[in-house]
Every structure is written in structure tokens, then in C-alpha cells.
Image (tube, rainbow, N blue to C red):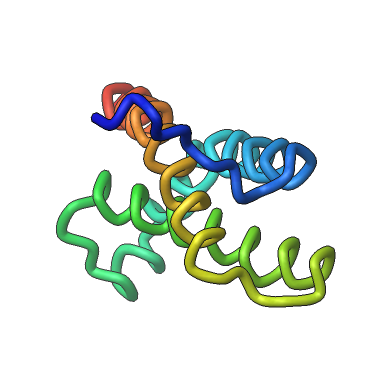
Amino acid sequence: MNPNYLPVMVLDKKDKKILDTMIEEEISKIPGLVRNLRLPQFQEAFQIKNESEYIYGYTHGSIIGKFETYYFVVHSGKKPGGPEVDEIGKTIFEKSNEIRDAISKISSKE
């Protein structure tokens, strides 16, 4: 790694804090999502093969959708560009273990 390289923070502190809050909110919704997905009508309609991966993808998509299309556009007045999208993705990736842990806690209660 280049010692002169300093990571550039593209999102301002307020946006980063809101993104982190949205991630935590989506993680807290995982138990309800699992309950709903296990209802017979959802199981028949979705025919999910891997519940954990579906929930992970759904949660990831919810975070991106809410932050990029709702918050970012409303508050910044524009769609996020490449650098912002990269930082959003990096932030979500850094929280992926928390998302997976929340999913595995629900799955282990079966």
C-alpha cells in the first residue's frame, strides 16, 4: 500500500451517520422479515431456495435503495455518483458481518 495514500471520505459526516443508522434499522427488521417469509402464502409465492441468502440480498438492496434513492436524492438533490456509490457499498460491506449475524441468530432459533 502506498504510504502517501489517504482514503478520501466522499460522503460527509452527516450522510455517513444517516447511512449507518439506515443499516442498523434494516438489521433490526430482519426478524420481522423472516417471520413474514415463513408464512405459507409467501413461501408459495417466492419459492426461496436459500432463505439466508435471500434475506441478506433483500436487506442489502433495501439499504441501497433507501439511501441512494430516497435520502441521497432528497437531501443532496442529485443521484450519487461513482465515488459516492463506492463509499456506500464499502460501508455496507463493512457491516455485512452484522447483517449475517442477525440472520444466523434467527435461523438458529428454528
